Amino acid sequence: MGMHEDLVRLSEVAAGFSYSPYSRFKVGAAGLFENPAGNQKIFTGCNIENAAYGPTNCGERTAVFSAVAEGYLRLIKMCVFTPTETASSPCGVCRQVMNEFGPDAEVVCTCNNPDAIILTTVAKLLPNAFGPKNLGK
Ligand code: THU
Figure 1: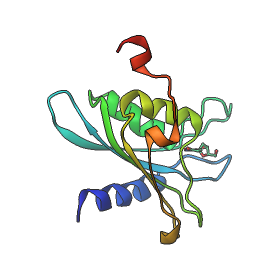
Figure 2 (figure 1 turned 90 degrees about the vertical axis):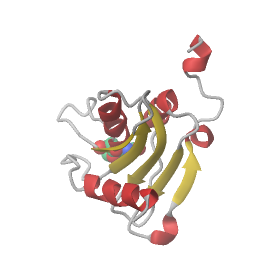
Figure 3 (figure 1 turned 45 degrees about the horizontal axis):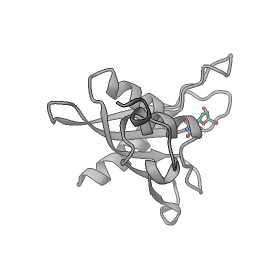
Figure 4 (figure 1 turned 180 degrees about the vertical axis):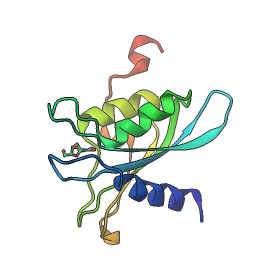
């Protein structure tokens, strides 16, 4: 089983942990990250909704924040899974967050229909992004 297949499978597992009683829309994410020492590790996430709606966190951001919280600051590849017939690409806020840690990262969105896969990159999803480079970082 290769890295790509691992990420896709783990994103589907993560969707099973989705806390989404309000939308009933399950999202799972699995990202490959690297830390400054050069170690690579997969972090997963799911969408986590809230009765106040606004505090809801998307699956992609849950994965990124888990990685950053362990010092894995560089996003290499993000896989997103929804148990639907069409694939969902990341929302605007998640695009901005992914750009912060992986402007060149690959993004793969899968769903129950294997023909509906979306293969793209953060840079394509967020052209002319405002990011760390604008602040000299
Ligand atoms: N959602 C994600 O987790 N990722 C996205 O990129 C789009 C939307 C979640 C948020 C909310 O829990 C549900 O999907 C419906 O919008």
